[in-house]
Image (cartoon, rainbow, N blue to C red):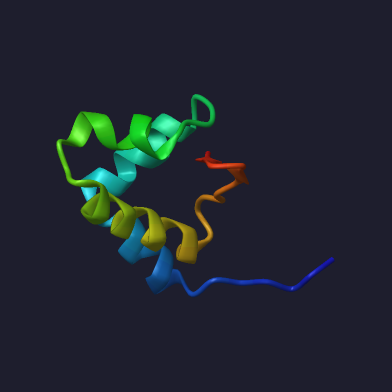
Length: 71
């Protein structure tokens, strides 16, 4: 078993934003495309992708790319 720990402050930072908490909540129902996740927030894709990078770097989500589709 790999010993992998993420500092608590990284996870806390990721969860501090309501947009990121909503994304986590939505992904609890199943995978979704970036476009589907971004739609309810009215953010431009570049801004939303910054939120996604924070969640990915914290280890709270994992992104999978299938061809040109990312889920």
